[in-house]
Image 1: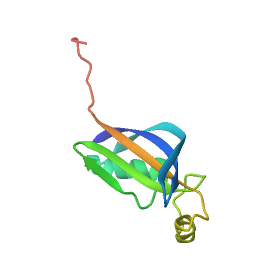
Image 2 (image 1 turned 90 degrees about the vertical axis):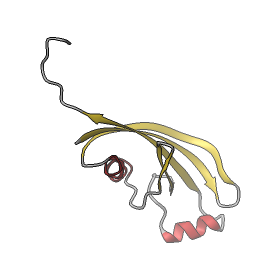
Image 3 (image 1 turned 120 degrees about the horizontal axis):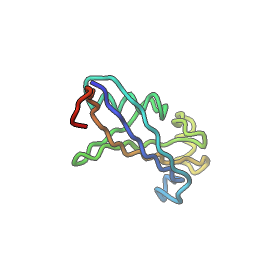
Length: 113
C-alpha cells in the first residue's frame, strides 16, 4: 500500500528547568511511502525525512505526532549533550512534528472524471 505522509514540524528552544520556550522555526515535508501500515509509513517518514533514530511517536485520538530533543542542526542529542542540557550548559530544541497520512489508490482512466 502506498501512503502520502505530510509532516508539519515546529521547533522551540527547550530548557530542562523551564520546558518549551520560544518558537525558532517550522517547515513541512512530504513523502510517498510504500509499506503495509500507517505506523510503518510514519516510522519511515521520520527515519528518511527527520533523521530521528529513537522517535517518541504518539497517537492521541487519531492525531499522530513525534517530539524529539535535537541540537541546532536538528540532530538527536548525544548522551553527553543530554546531560549538559539537563545541567543548563547546552542549548537544546524540541522538534515537534504532527503527521497527516493519506492512503493512495491508483485511479484508472474513466469517462466519469
